[in-house]
Length: 89
Image 1 (cartoon, rainbow, N blue to C red):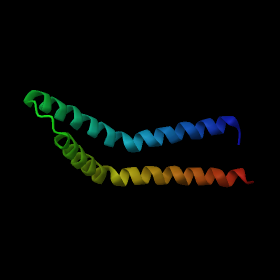
Image 2 (cartoon, one colour):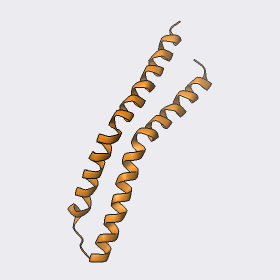
Image 3 (cartoon, rainbow, N blue to C red):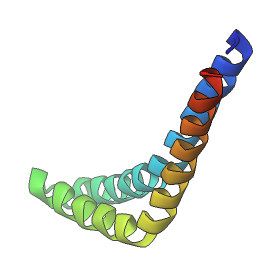
Image 4 (cartoon, rainbow, N blue to C red):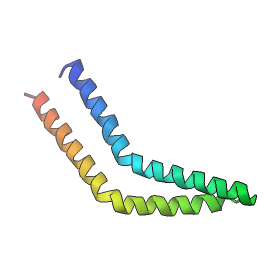
């Protein structure tokens, strides 16, 4: 396995991580910004007020995107293990 193949695998790994975790992070960021604006407007500085909605949204997005995330990671690992099998030959 040459250096080029390691770079390709590394790039694909980063792509799969961003593709699977991205929706969760974007949703948490959007809810956090929204709750921050609400807290600034109402002068309520309660930590749980920002945490609980973020947690609920992340759980909801995980339930919706879970099958996609699972299939993406499974396909990636199948590719990786196939490539590992080729190295031994």
